[in-house]
Picture 1 (tube, helix red, strand yellow):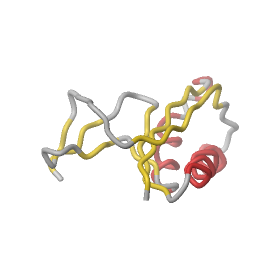
Picture 2: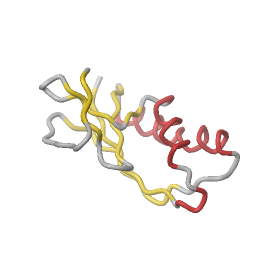
Picture 3: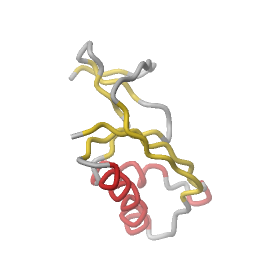
Picture 4: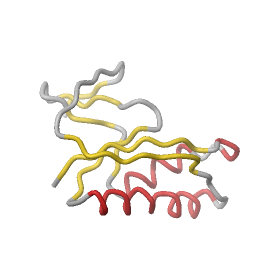
Length: 100
């Protein structure tokens, strides 16, 4: 499986972020990334990480978040822009960590 990062902007009219994150986790996308020090680091807001077989699978999973979140929220959500990229190495830091 390959590693992917997604970044997105939501129209915050309905404040859908909590529902969007909950839906993202159901679709295999998470706001945490595991580092070589065996700690989980929180990614920046509106950034997610996932493991998928292909880029197409990653994009399909990302696109499915919206419908699940809308059903939970009971209102429509506007994803204003997004990007999904595959990566092999990364350098990062966060003020939020947790042990694995």
